[in-house]
Image (cartoon, rainbow, N blue to C red):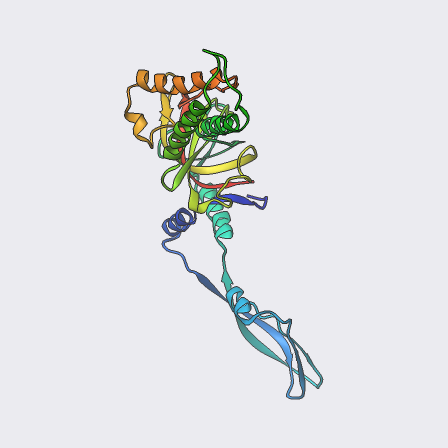
Length: 290
């Protein structure tokens, strides 16, 4: 990897675990011994500091003092010890290079066959879980309708104001059930291989919990495939909820009813999609970066 990276998601636990497996354990601090020749003296020395906080200097293992001497000097050999400390991002940078060197990463291309258990890397435009996005938009529409639609309705026309409230509460409950737990889903469509992808991220490792810096951008994703489906198969976006156990006809009827009520109120409700069609795969990401 020649380009420097900026991650918006980094699963540090996976980075440490994989590095430990590849290197038979990892050291938190690496000592580096160097020999050099320098001028020494026994006379007055002027020491200069840069005013850094002591704790900060210790954390980075940096000595930023400077000195200036006035005297006749003799040449001698001096051994110094430095300590090198990695950040989580620099460790990931090292991990990716190791995975590439050892041939563990498959780059997604037009002929790729995605197999469960493979480490793969691909680039695409990320989107939030489409069903959460649609439900939140619909709930917001219903909320706006409650505020602005206070005029009496002609008999048999439109949706009563209290009906908007019921629809909104149903959609909010539905959306909340999809957001429960410590993971959330992102999707990528129309990859170079013809696949769709479902990316399950742990919210604790997101750079921004609201994902404002992540969605709708072009990013690279590196991770491990945990499921792959072919044409005619699907990956459910409702698999984390009790609704995933409902028979498909009942589920479609319930979702369709909410869309129908919203449409009766004059809203342009987008189609609710509750699965990703194959060819598709689900991946646990190690990192998402630009």
